[in-house]
Image 1 (cartoon, rainbow, N blue to C red):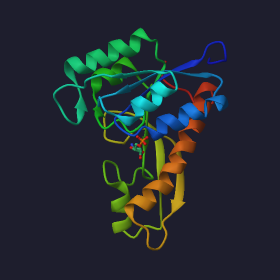
Image 2 (image 1 turned 180 degrees about the vertical axis):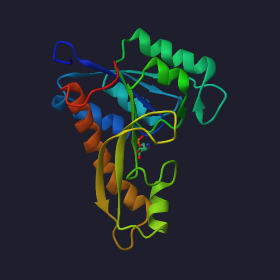
Image 3 (image 1 turned 30 degrees about the horizontal axis):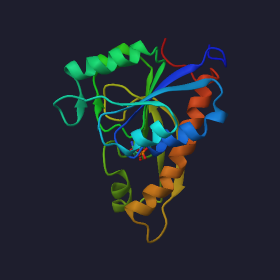
Image 4 (image 1 turned 90 degrees about the vertical axis):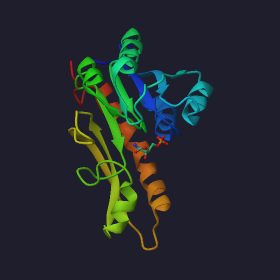
Length: 201
Ligand code: GRF
């Protein structure tokens, strides 16, 4: 049970710009039961680390090991140790460009969520906006979902849709979707911290 006295302790994992992380931090007055404990990046030069430090958050670069697209082995164990030391309740992936493997998943069962820029199950993986435009879709959107061992396959927590407009391009569409991403991440965290959405024990 999360309360103002017993907050939901979150870690936000990023790889770059960090605008979703920033949106969560900026909206924290709406999240009295949430504590952003730390921000972790697998990229040393991630702009999001600078943003997080400007908010006086603990913001660290944690090397993610030899693989480009996954977090595994010793590096994964370092992530787990870092997160466990800080008693993290929920890991929030926000533009963290790596596949999370079984070690982290079993260390935080049902306690990892992700934001994805499509209306899942449409367009898991990369280049979602390009694919929506190529298919002449009428709408696009974003999804917050639990992370499981698949790629963008975990249970869906919330979605938002936006129209695809004539003369859209991937950048314009991405910006329109991103605004909605920033809203739903906070909404889902609010629901978890108010015990409306349950996470793993
Ligand atoms: C977002 O579009 C998110 O949906 C995707 O990666 C992007 C990260 O953007 N997973 P930012 O780093 O939060 O600005």
